[in-house]
Length: 627
Image (cartoon, rainbow, N blue to C red; front, side, top):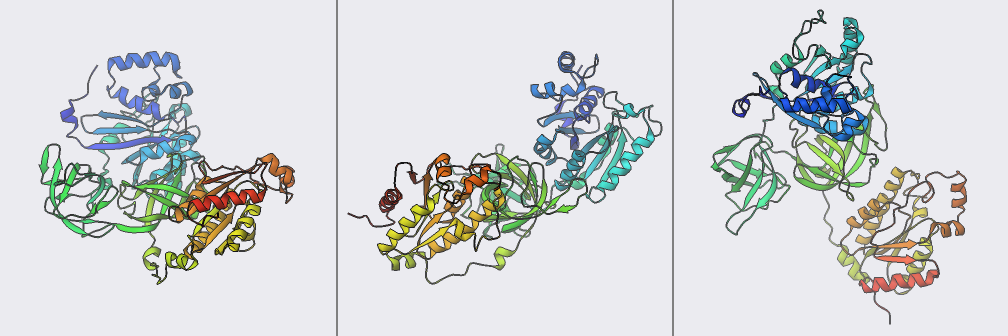
């Protein structure tokens, strides 16, 4: 049976985007299936397929398992949980809907956040037998942070508590007390049974004590107009369209506001202003463009604009800064480390980003602010972040599209977290770079050498410091100006406050790298001897200096040989459990993939290995070749 209206009619209606969320097994998929089934929006062939799937995977006995309508993945059907975000479009005579069925399992919180990022309203399901759980509160907090302002508290499985009004009232009161400070504009509470249809599409006789509308009736009438993105004009440039020398256009999608042909327009990061010459679409030139329109903009002036730039209204420009504060939702088993370099995608711009401080982590049960040095899977926190280059943004509460970003792993390109910008930090504008009259090249020329960082990495006991000392002695004898930075020595001063946790190791190398960069700017050849177990931090130091100024030397000594030498007695203590987080024993070491110099130490004396380093440095022009 087909009762859906023709597409032309549906598209003229008001559209409501909503998501279902809550803890696992609270009945989210069943609820959507019930909405579609009782609204007569399931085709006959879909119903037949659903009946067959219910016999194979269903959990409702001989009844059709409506949850399987949206649990499309085979793994979801076998496990009885939602893994991915399932989007469904449906329409009624009063409104059109796009619903995102999001997973309740903690492992897939990232998918729930994806669904919430574009939603106007959240249906938060709570099992009447269990009440609000930790994941219920976590999803509520995420919805609040992501700008969802309207919530339907659907107390599901009310039939399994004999339709008791006092159970419903207790859950509603407890939840409202929790959500009081989350900033929701409205919270509507409805007792439902998704399996049997009570109060889903029509009010049920089983709950005579409930005086409100059915869920569908509420969704058809709720006013979410306050969620609409209008505001100032914002246009992230997705692509520079340059088919020939006589045409340059900037393609993308209008993120907010309206633009007209002839309007003034500004490049956010430079402040340069021009005027709109044309607004081009596949249908031809248009006089105006609005939120969601995909267009190509041409300007009356030639400006330096590239992919990732943000075009904006000159009257109300966005903030531009390389530091900002933001709420973070961490979505990876890999811990979030202050000082470690990631990539941030803000609009269409991708730039390196570093967390400079975790101000606090939020307890999802109490909303208490907790001290934290790292973030783990599903943690929510407020952080300060720093980007390598200034970026344009709006606070998230003003513009969800230009105030949000994702954090990406530099090596794997996996999405690790999502952020909502709260405000810019004015430190960069208040502390400008002070120009100096003498630069790195002048200092290096006076010393008749090319400055560089020679970074020796390897396990404890591999021979790094021994080799580095020999290299420095020979460089010094040859008249070169050098400095030696050794991991143990720095821990007596600059890094004396750091331990050996992963977070402390990251900060240890960050500080050492910054110190080495200053010494390179002074024109020196800097010998650095650090275990530096993580590739990401070694790569971070590489990016601090110019191309060719970072020479990674892998001092490759097998761990058995390092333990045999054990010059400091550390391996014996680590194996005895007296030292925790010891690299190679209970903490990882990530060897370089393509080091500039790879030293195999077995069978070679330190002096031979030092000679090899000096020859490689001569080839790179850092020192003069010796005949």
